[in-house]
Length: 328
Image (cartoon, rainbow, N blue to C red; front, side, top):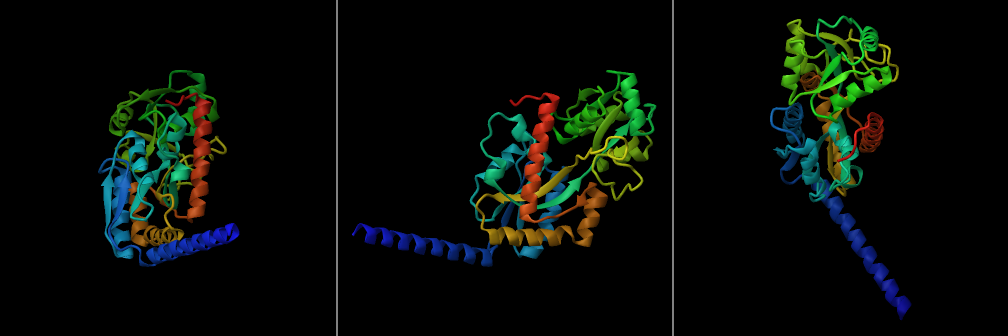
């Protein structure tokens, strides 16, 4: 009797499992049947927000449903990340995620979500290389000269930083570590304040995105030295990388992608991945990303994006430990 009861239990469990698979398969085939919410962890008008709205417009056309951009700024994106990590795993809440999200776990002693456990990678969308610039009064025409100058004038060179533990801050600290120089960080409340300080000569160097620096560059108020990524920028092909400029192995860029709550059916993830690939690799979209946002379009599979995020988490944890920052 006991064996018979166990057999019936297993049969019922199998029927339920098959029914669930059929339901998920049906959902994936009909998806989407209602608007999709695209959550952004930063304020309206920022680069992440602009990218989200460009992608939402095109993705709405391809999916046949409206994508509604929802801004949830605060805590370097952590509020938005938590919002999506705890949302239903049905594919109707997505998150624009960036490099800062893979820095947070090394800086927060306690977090309400786990990036790899609670969020499902969909696709990378773009890499955002930053550039190293100096004030024209700095007597260095390239990175090697800048390093030599820093070594000869210890504690006298300074760089602007916006947010301790932000990608640009870690880029500058990685440069200092690899070059074995001591350059003084000077904190500013925002990128605008830092750019003004650089243009006026209050600080010597700054690492930031290309679009935010273009007005100063065109006015001749700053000097470009190098790009932070392993590859040169398509918009500035003559600008060398830091790797080429005397810091072999240097490669640090910001990035942006899309994730969903963990547990979203794989068929829905695959559909989203395919459609995002079409959106990002569209000629018009590529041009917008490159010329307007200073981003290099780049997509990948969900599995590749998961491995990428894992690598970023490990890299940032090592760097934060190296520079002695403590989790709060």
